[in-house]
Length: 136
Image 1 (cartoon, rainbow, N blue to C red):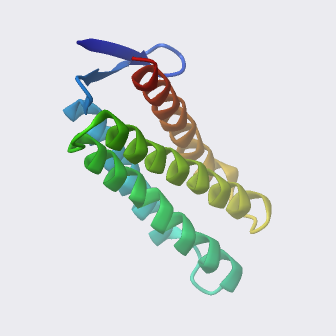
Image 2 (tube, rainbow, N blue to C red):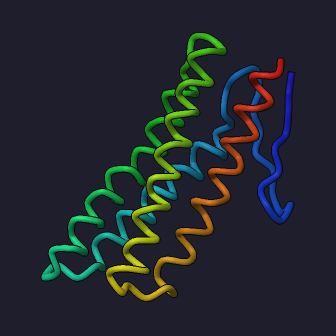
C-alpha cells in the first residue's frame, strides 16, 4: 500500500509505504538537521539572547530527523503516528525559535527564511502523513 504526499508547491513527492518513511524523506530530514547545525555555527556567540534561542533551535531542529528515524522503525501504526507527531512538534518548535531569532534578536531574514520555509514544508508533510495514516 502506497500513498504519496506532495510538498507545498507540488514540486516533489514524499513516499510512505506500509508505515515506513522513504529513504528520500529520511535524507531530507537529515539535511534539515545539517542546515540547522550550519546556521547555528554562524550565529553571533557574544549575545546571550541569541545563544539561548539558538541552542533551543539546535536541539529541536536536529530532533526532527531523530523522530523521523524512530518513526521509520515503528512497530505499529500507533507508534508510527506518535513518532511522527513528535517530529511535527519539534519542527513547529524549531519554527518558533527561528521566528524569535529573526524578530527579537535581529538575525537577518535572508538567513532564517530558507530554513523557515523548509520547516513549513516538513510540518505540512508530517501533518498529511499523520492524517492519512490515522484515517486507514
